[in-house]
Image (cartoon, rainbow, N blue to C red; front, top):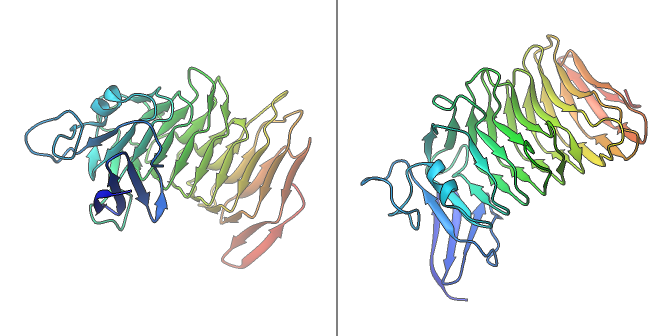
Length: 305
């Protein structure tokens, strides 16, 4: 296939063919060339006012405009800068992909969503097969979250990765399944800082949180796992690192008691949390080979709490 050009913009490799566009973040391909949607561009620093989103020279100035223009399976690529949108970004398009320019160490610098003007959650996701990567969430609004998942319908196959959640006074980093089910959700390679209530609230089926870093403040929780009676969670929490304040904080908290299904909690390291892993561990739960640590050294957490 012949290519028009190769570019590395903000640490994200964009290789554009005459048919489609491949996007890479940290060397990982994010967009398959067979994705049927169009690419939409957002750049708040562009001169000349907002365009139609069809290219960098015609980029939208706000993410709100891009989401309003997007259809199923479209891709939104956002340049560096701090985006204080006027209202919650509600994703309802199947297969929508949103890629920022990364959170650190990139040529163009970070792409940040900030809640200075938006007085509600920064993003809600109510669509299947959505992918979100390379964004920095600055959530300053009391009792509001960086991301709410499955607020109006059951959703499937959400992938959140390579994002930074700097939560300030925000309540949750990612809050899933308040009323509806999130299915096959995967949160991977993300960082959660100072979520006043919880970094990730897991309430779904076949959910996974892997390779993430949690800084847990006083009275906070890194991950709370809440599926209850009659759920079939089949979920996995693994390869994460938790650094606490040793002041009523908890690394992993299991509050539900599912009657069927299997969930696995393994290979997590919890350092300096007042409580490492706590809660219900029956009905096919498996919590093994996790580690706790302090300045005095580490120890294996085994068997289940």
